[in-house]
Length: 263
Image (cartoon, rainbow, N blue to C red; front, top):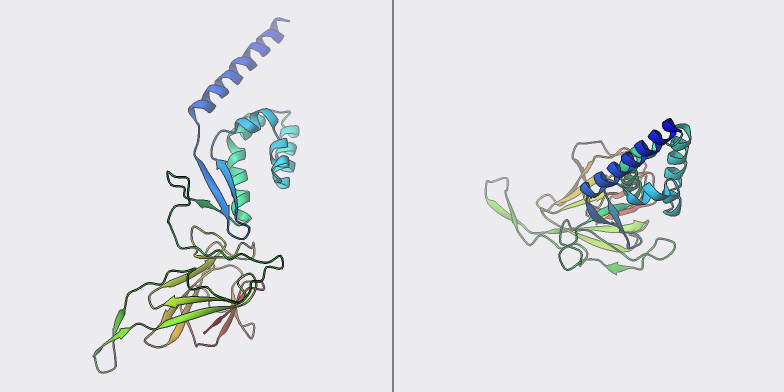
């Protein structure tokens, strides 16, 4: 009995310590936003009170099925001892899972509205992920500045022309996205690193950059991805080095149906 009482007291003390530690480590709360669906989820880093009381049922109720099986397996194999560690780890696991499914961290200002940050594009798609033909010039604010360069005779020439990215397939089909000289269109899965977001696991967080060279009237693309950028003939664009493409070229982003024409 004495040993049993000591274990009970020890458990109560440990539980109280963890509870106090949880209050001291409130963690950081923020919102994650999915561009494709417009869905927002409030999350928190650090200690999870919810997991403390409900354990592996938390990821199950959140739809995090992989997290459920992982936490359940770890808890069973450790006879419940891993529960103490997962109290501090699960929130991070959940945030990473959301990020892998197209959610990004969203800045919130004091009024609770979405704060200004990197330019992002959101297009309301139909169930088949296509959109009607539209002029999307309001989706990206152009850089209202002229660039200067020297011509063959050393004279200064103002560069003010615009390029345009036309969605020909995938979730941006039909969109017209202007590219002002000096502006970068960054395509990727992660909204923190990209301003043209494609929430697809085949797309890298920062997949590629596209700029328009007004002086030479060509496009410059740089691929940073794992799954590549492909031309219309399925040739892969060279990785991590500038590649010049002529107007009219069609590119495919990774192993997806998302294609764009460089107008």
